Length: 135
Ligand code: DCM
Image 1 (tube, helix red, strand yellow):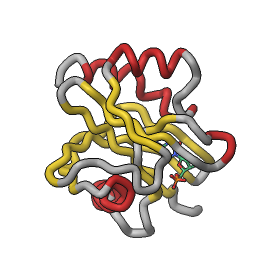
Image 2 (cartoon, rainbow, N blue to C red):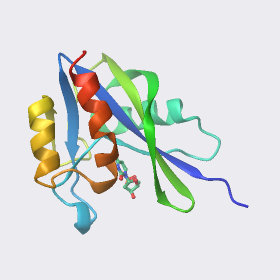
Image 3 (cartoon, rainbow, N blue to C red):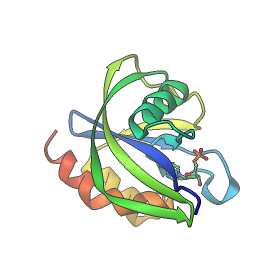
């Protein structure tokens, strides 16, 4: 049996806004918005992977918090998890994405309703809306 690889994504909420990143590739998701992140290397913890990915993709240093409850099977060997993350240093820049955007709860609902989120990430919308009402 092969181990399941983990893809980690960061739920960064500050001042009642969530940071979303717009993908440029592949074609199926070009222009759609996601929680930024990426694949953990073999032997790398999800927390370390998220810190590395957010450093590479956004140019920020984060502290990693708790996981969102939902996880998503992307393929039989790949599972997508979201971890809460808090920016400790730097301002996010779209190094590898088309654009970045801080959205409030209403904007997140609208993006979801119009099909502008990466499909896998829609699983987190209910939990993200709860977080957005709190922090
Ligand atoms: N992915 C996703 N949602 C995210 C981050 C990643 O569905 N928030 C998926 C897209 C790819 C895989 O995980 O299938 C690896 O991501 P990437 O291409 O960004 O390395």
